[in-house]
Length: 356
Image (tube, rainbow, N blue to C red):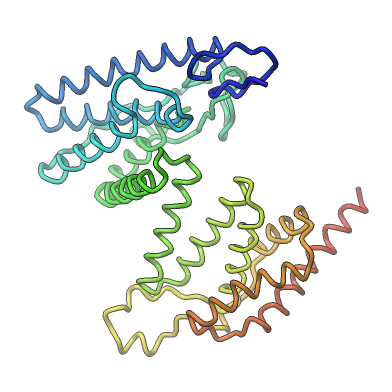
């Protein structure tokens, strides 16, 4: 059965182009790519001829915005006659960062987004102004609702405009340099991940790589509370992207860390006396929190994993953590506490089912 690479529509005898697109998607993609590359080419010429650093920074922003919009097509293996979007992003993000680092440039605060109930992608009029993220009923693109700092109004923005809104808030809050550091960090993670995969990473792959880098950094600084949060986010990311086994393993690890009472000691790394005084794990501060146990119980129920297999998964991660971090609570004790708490949620779910 033929399937379009872009809209994923499939049916028997569906006519596809050489690049695996249906007729409507080929026309739509061709128009969008042509329009965006025309603006990118215009901005590249402006950068080459401009003598003003602020103008170059603004033009880099235009190139990055349109390259980010085209990146989703590159990830599907679709062809581009000119530079690949990922190459444009790497080049002009680096150039923009270099200009900002060497010359004091105040980024321009512009009115980003749409204040009326209109899709920012296709322009269709919406029934009402959305109050939270939703998909456009026509183009099915995700519409985001954000407050912009320039006038404090809630606006509808595209996925590509989210980064610009966040940057404007960083400027308004005086944290722009920290924001740029975070962007450079993500750019470097994306570059390394692209080299390792041999292709542009998908959004969830990129997010996983960033979280893993953050977790590794927390290990270096002994910030075990932040490490726990990174592993939690990885677990939920895996759940949301169809990997329940991986999610269970990560959330079991989080539960074990929670029982041991993880602390953040990054600020004490240069003071050996304080490091001896303040322990990285304090059991009196440990507990199993519903925000982790409840989702874990739900995933376990959905996957119908046997209790002995769940126990085996716990001891695989638990024994490793206990040996590496010298955790005060033994895995056997932690498992007894966790399985009891999971059992409470199983009873609650059964009661709710009977009530229905």
